[in-house]
Amino acid sequence: MNYNIGLLKGDGIGPEIVSSAVKVLEKVGAKYGHTFSFTDYLIGGIAIDTVGEGLPKETVEGCLGSDSVLLGAVGGPKWDTLPGNQRPEKALLGIRSAMGLYTNLRPAKLYPALKDASPLRADIVEKGFDIMMVRELTGGIYFGERGRREGKYGPEAYDTEAYSVMEIERIARVAFETAMKRNKKVISVDKANVLESSRLWRETVHRIAADYPEVECTDMLVDNTAMQIVRNPAQFDVVVTSNMFGDILSDEASQITGSIGMLASASLGDTSRGLYEPIHGSAPDIAGQNKANPIATILSAAMMLRYSFSLMEEADCIENAVNKVLDKGYRTADLAMGRDIPTLSCSEMTDKILEEI
Ligand code: NAD
Image (cartoon, rainbow, N blue to C red; front, side, top):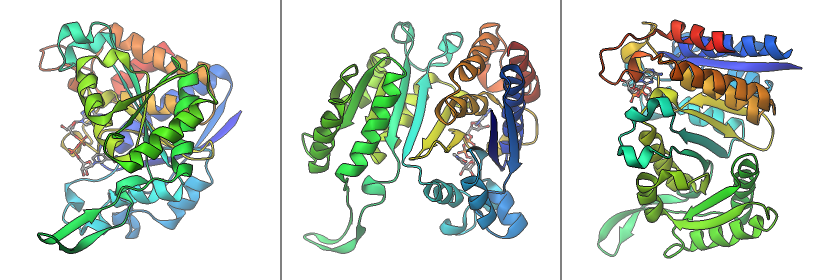
């Protein structure tokens, strides 16, 4: 098969880590008989410097014409003084919305070789964990009606959480479909003891659950979930939740893995075309020094194979290669965790992963 992949390298370490992922995709393509064609499009600070805007029209059109899109990261001190709506990070919201991406998938997995990196106690991480956060991305309080007004105690501000049945149904289906490819467990997170929007969320998720009898579906209140993630992360398989709860809980879950340079993400909509990116930023402090950990971006490319192209074996191949390299003890500087051990550069880590494919 031939696949056209749009590349948004962006700023800082973006170009280095995306180039690593491209090499990995090319190697996997050669092994399994696929051709991946890559086209670069400008986004973020580099786009502002080159054409005067963070998200040029050509980039949007190019991404919409691609089979899927891989993004590095955007932003950096050079553009920090620009007004909010002209900053590189604004381009991210723009491209997600132009591509109609309403689901954010963020795996938070503990790699056995990196157990020491987790801030959790050894007895808690002993069992390992592999959580898939499914966060609704385009609804809820971040997009609801907001404003300032005169209230009971004087001037006040308000934001509104609103979810339609349609929005809940479609994210619930993504969660159940995802669970079907994993351990068939969905935990739906809400605040149904207080919020009416959460009561509709709960009712709707259960109606959709009836279409997936093989999947065990349970509810958990968001405050309890925040505790359970650090108390017993092994209990989770797929977690589905609203935009704001997902924003907070996915960051919490990422931190217990202990390694920001390892975490991938996917944003998906109604088509197979998605936007895949590491969860970290552009790391300006190490940009251009060949020090970045490329694994989060390489694992994002693996997610693209799995979720956009249904190339499961190929995705497994990349993930296994990463596991083997870590098991053999190879580390980039961010994974050394203060220990005085030899570390690999971005390109050396990429080469080790290529050797295992
Ligand atoms: P950051 O994630 O870029 O960096 C935080 C720390 O983690 C830094 O010390 C950095 O060196 C390290 N780090 C991050 N990724 C790494 C990797 N792959 N390998 C090794 N070390 C890594 O967060 P920040 O410093 O808060 O933000 C820097 C810039 O990135 C800002 O302009 C911010 O707005 C932007 N940002 C962009 C995105 C995105 O593009 N999706 C996300 C977050 C932040």
